Amino acid sequence: GDSVTQMEGPVTLSEEAFLTINCTYTATGYPSLFWYVQYPGEGLQLLLKATKADDKGSNKGFEATYRKETTSFHLEKGSVQVSDSAVYFCALPAGGTSYGKLTFGQGTILTVHP
Amino acid sequence: GAGVSQSPSNKVTEKGKDVELRCDPISGHTALYWYRQSLGQGLEFLIYFQGNSAPDKSGLPSDRFSAERTGGSVSTLTIQRTQQEDSAVYLCASSTLAGGVYEQYFGPGTRLTVT
Image 1 (cartoon, rainbow over the protein chains, first blue to last red):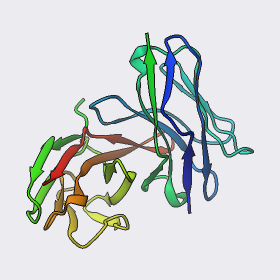
Image 2 (image 1 turned 45 degrees about the horizontal axis):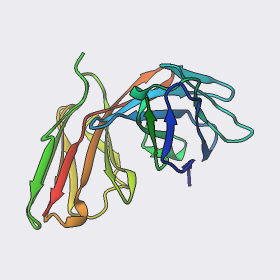
Image 3 (image 1 turned 60 degrees about the vertical axis):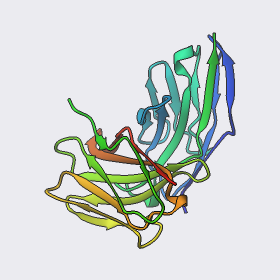
């Protein structure tokens, strides 16, 4: 079945450091890919998405490129801030449906220190 | 505009009692989803509604769990005879088509604690 694997956390960085959170997937066909973020005490928010191979999603300084060859969708940010501290989830629509349920990775906790 | 809202935000109940969790989706969103977030299991899908029907109930963990949606809007997730393993955060999402992709927007969740 479809699945998402994220790098194990937690990740602890200093402010202005470079961030990479790895995400690889197994899926039927070429589904859209998503990154969601969950700030402390809040619900999930869509951070960015990519709908086809080689697409780059970007938002709030974060980027991720849909790599079909390596079945990856790694999240990157050039200079993190304390306010980026959150849990990050990689996700895709399960079963090849664009409107159905999302399958999530296990989440990566990011802590950024001043 | 208003986002997805859920109530209550927190619920503490005794083992064996029934609970109802409510979700108000974004107006006009025809798709609605329930997920459960727990420390041990991560984020798990429970059920998906399109309008008032539920074409995918595959994630409901037992027959103690049920959900309904009325008027293509509000949804209620009911857990009967609650057990301690039901303790989790229950998240609701609604969905719209954007750029050819259905994007899911999540509510803040209901934290359920079964004592």
